[in-house]
Length: 408
Ligand code: HEC
Ligand code: HEC
Image: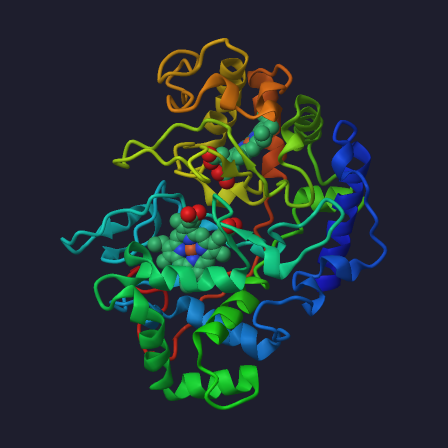
């Protein structure tokens, strides 16, 4: 199964090698060994230094679902990264501590000071491939994380939500003792002692580093690379509709693939596109280092991971792609900015804090496109959906708490 997926990936790489006519920097593909795109990076350079094994993966799955990792024992990773919403949450902005329910139906059940988070929840599907180069290399230790690439590796990322006040920590403990407190909690649960020993080969191996390693090992198994597009690349000419093939061509000709490149349809780089702020938030989100740049997201599995953009203001694919016409025109001095004009028809306007010259050249240089193109591109993006990813929900977790936290 795994090797089949890798072969699909390989064929995508060759497609991009052949079609990236206008992007000479990423054309030197040199893949001789399919293990170059093992989701585990061949086991080389895994932060934590431990080779992944099945015991780590099954432990990581339980940790991912167990709200014992949150301060008030009400939120798990899966609260916001749930398979029913493509391992995202279907919300513009996430709701962690104090919430009740799942996805868009989740409400603030406790009258506390904890509101929604500041950024849209990205999927964890295919995050094993974050940072993959056009020629298929992945370096797990350097894999960029978050909308602004501020952290590297799934291992390091996994400890972040435990420390975050709104996401999981809440009022239960201070940030400086949060990880120790969670390690203590797990150490008092017999089943976790057994599972960590099996996964890491020694007693007393419940450490925050190993929590991160186990969760990361699990996340690297949540991959979805058998979409109709992948099947088409593998030689099944009937896998794509005519509209999807037209959309694929337009996507390349218009220049979307200048940033949405490579096997994940992302260069994993930061770009200023000019997405407007979400009015639910009190302050403007200025992105990476205050530059209003955000990372190019993958375009895989968007059918299940909306709404879109770093703050969920792209309500659907039509509105999201339409915004590029506005941003392109604005970058060329043809309106679309300053909070009015250019968007039209209730479309999104360019963020008033972003200047014309700040917009990325790859947006400015997009070819002209119209609503027919958008329909075809949407059809193409739908061909990047692979609903066949692992949706397993554990029946129980070792703490005895509800798997996924307060999501019922
Ligand atoms: C309250 C909702 C919430 C919870 C709980 C949560 N996350 Fe997230 N997750 C987010 C949001 C929002 C982001 C993006 C934040 C940003 O970019 O600044 C994110 C980002 C990520 C990313 C980076 C994805 C990428 O492509 O950059 C990973 C991986 C991830 N979370 C895994 C986890 C794990 C593991 C846990 C549990 C330990 C967890 N999350 C708990 C909402 C949540
Ligand atoms: C300059 C690089 C660049 C170009 C060119 C570009 N994009 Fe993007 N794309 C991005 C970035 C960066 C984001 C995230 C912006 C944000 O959230 O603030 C994004 C977000 C998206 C999203 C939302 C995905 C999600 O999960 O939220 C879609 C859909 C999308 N782009 C499609 C397209 C299409 C279609 C084109 C061509 C018309 C295109 N992009 C051209 C960089 C680019």
